[in-house]
Length: 180
Image 1 (cartoon, rainbow, N blue to C red):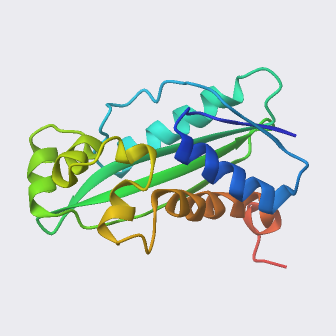
Image 2 (image 1 turned 90 degrees about the vertical axis):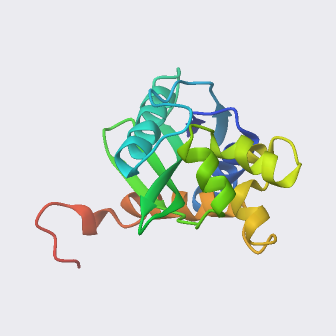
């Protein structure tokens, strides 16, 4: 089986490797493809962020020989006057079956919320807050703000595992199924 990640971001690739090797053992070959998300660099809202993940997965699935296409997209949402992170994962299979998982809602500090409301992308806003560089290719906002109790990769692993439910328990997703 060949799985293609719709990103060259090392954190997203590592998350896909971890999840797919747990699910499929060594029977999966994982590649990365630089694909367009079709959404702004900093998506806002669940719909836009999910659309980016879906487009990445579908573009990855078009890579020659791909059996699975995987898309991960991080975005921002506003709720209760605060700004939070959000993220979505999509796993598209060649036969048209698609799994989706989302979550990772982390409250952003006021200075970061102000910066992203003003048009900044989250990664550079976190870099400016911390004095670090390219944090989105490493522990990300989640790792920094939770003091490494969670990191960006583990968060993506969680979302991908949720998206894999569609493939792990397919009988429950059949139309009209009440379990079994």
